[in-house]
Image (cartoon, rainbow, N blue to C red; front, top):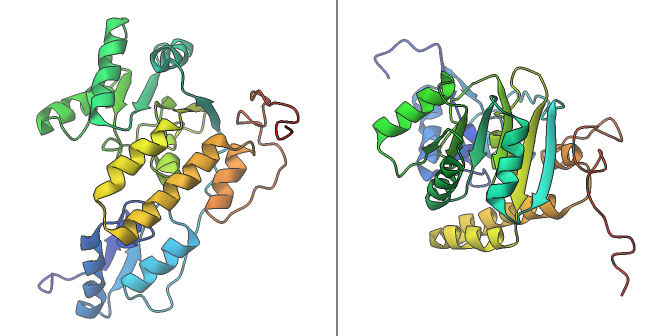
Length: 282
């Protein structure tokens, strides 16, 4: 790089720099060397999902002095959020697919085996779906991704491995067949719907067992990042079981607020939740 005339340096997915970020990668910490090597070159850091704590840590780790912070609005008012307890997941997913016939959509699963199982079940019911996860051959993943982007197939079933750099504007729904790892992941994954500005459904099916699944997956992490990751699992579980406006809950998590009492675009504000009266009374 020292032999190259640099204009500036851009770090994408910059939340990976921070231990408090939702996808921390220790190697990203080394990017702080860039400021030492190129003190006169501007360094830009970009991410769509960073709390105030993460933004501050990114700046510190990249050795930025008095950085200018530009924070956009996190709200996506055209996304309709709905959260439901998981029962018969295949039937629940099929009900959503039948409401969006011939429209593009993504189904996210927690584990690779969940992707394969869901694909087999949906194929058996006559839906045209393709899988995507890190356990597949690169060529097969690439073929399936292109088939989805070029609309040779409308439905892709995937783990979190799918989506980086995907900008397909007409995704009309994103289904989570299990609880995501964090609210950051949920914001990022559900945010792949409705990029054309039109209404899109974001439906999350969860169960208390998802919490145990994530505990098992995170078991091998080092103690400090593991504790932080489990804190994020707690936050998304609170989101799933909460009864406050979904848009407000996401905004509050990222340090912003909503300027209206009723978003008109979530199960809570639309009155779709079945709430028990006096539920705390014995």
